Image 1 (cartoon, rainbow, N blue to C red):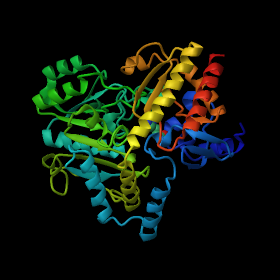
Image 2: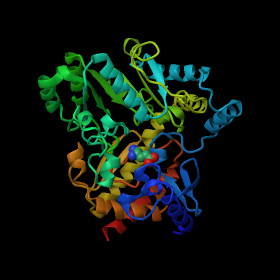
Image 3: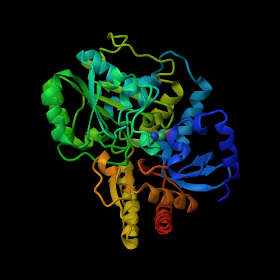
Length: 429
Ligand code: HOZ
């Protein structure tokens, strides 16, 4: 594959950006080689600056459920761009998007728009601390909730891919307030809350973990989180930045029938543009400024371009058969992958919820951070590069998720299954 222009751009990028990138996983450190620089993308396909064309399963790390450059979303952005790109003043678009979000997520009576999932989580956590008057929070090992200080403790893919378990620069006293437990371990949560429940402001969790590969919650795990938080007066935050509107219109909370106190959403509700949101009951959200004392603000919050894209995205996702089709296509792909691994004798485990999927190179069932660390990352590295050679673009880390879109055709899926067979064979050596 010719990568001349990508290589040139990467050399140039490294002179002006840390590691040549603006977000670490995309530097390809975990898979060797250098990143591809992207020229354009349309539908399920992405094209690099050297003209190499790939079937894409990264989907901008999840939000592009309807594929790249969906004509109706592009049109909505164009119309809004002609009317102004940022006002720092309210627009009707913010109300309609908030109405669509609250309509899909009954636990979110009131919603505040921000600019990213990181910001949504940071703000929701501050609010939980403000309401409860408690400092401690509980998160789970391998769950990623963005890069605010309290969250960069045992934080999943980005750090795991780089082999740095925790992050320097976090004030020790603050990090000490972030308690961590293994994902899916309900007993240890009960024990912790029996000892310290009265000091804990909130639990934050990805209801389906999506930053150490896909890991579904075990039966009863989310229920336990709901029960212990209710009993101890702490709050439950679902980080649905990846799962909200992806696994179902009402997110993971609708699949598992659990109502958290807060929900954090991200890039999906901006149609792929930079957006985040957090919300909960009116009583809780009334504590946010300007109604309440917990301050949070931003010039670009509710940005009209992002609101226009998000409104169109949610309208399109509300149409019939979207989630049925995502399920059918994802099942087709993952069945093909499973058959390939079985035929070739590759040790692999598969986790999938709807259109989020992972192929883990291990013979251990992957249920938490410990088990995900049993994956053979050297095998993944060879597999990843072989997939690229086959024209398939997957995330450059064993610990990131694959995403199906509504625009992947059955032909492209069949092509991907064949590519997977060839890449596995090559990776086996
Ligand atoms: N770790 C991020 C996704 N889970 C990477 C995002 C990016 O590089 O854009």
